[in-house]
Length: 164
Image 1 (cartoon, helix red, strand yellow):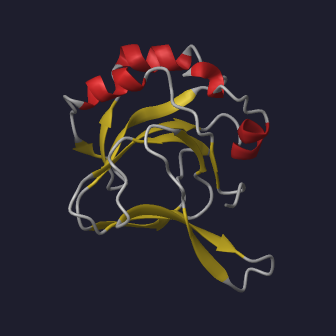
Image 2 (tube, one colour; image 1 turned 60 degrees about the vertical axis):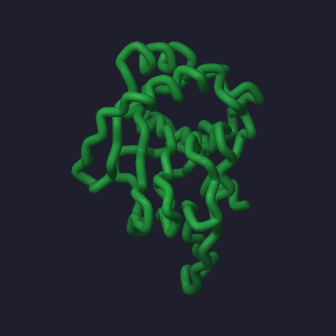
C-alpha cells in the first residue's frame, strides 16, 4: 500500500446505519465531472461537520454503474476524501491509483484496498480511477475536503477517525 495515495483506517463510522438509511432513498444526479451522485441530507452533513476537523467541501454517495469505467483523474476541487465502500465488494469492481517512480519514467497501478463500511482516506490529488466490470452497482460515500492537505490530515489522524 502506498500511504502517499491512500490510507485505510479500518474504522467503521458511528453513523453507518444513518448512511444506509439515507441510501434507501437517493436522489441521483450526474455531476459536471460525469459522476453519478446523491448528496447527503443537510442534517447528516451538519452532524459530520461537527465531528470533523476540516470544512466539508462535499458529501454524498457516488455510484458506478455495472460494466463501467471512470477515467484516470485527479479531483480539481478536493485535496482528499474520506470514502466508505457501501456496496458489497466484488473482485471485478475496484478503484486504483497510478504510482510514478521517482524519475517519473515508469508508472504502476495499485488496487485501493477498500473494506466495506470502513473509512478510507484517499489523496484525490494523485491519479486514481474506477473500473466496474461487475454486474452490480459500486457505491461509496465520499466526504471531500479542500481546506487542508491529505498529508497533513493523515499525519494527525487519530485511531477513532474523529468518531464520525
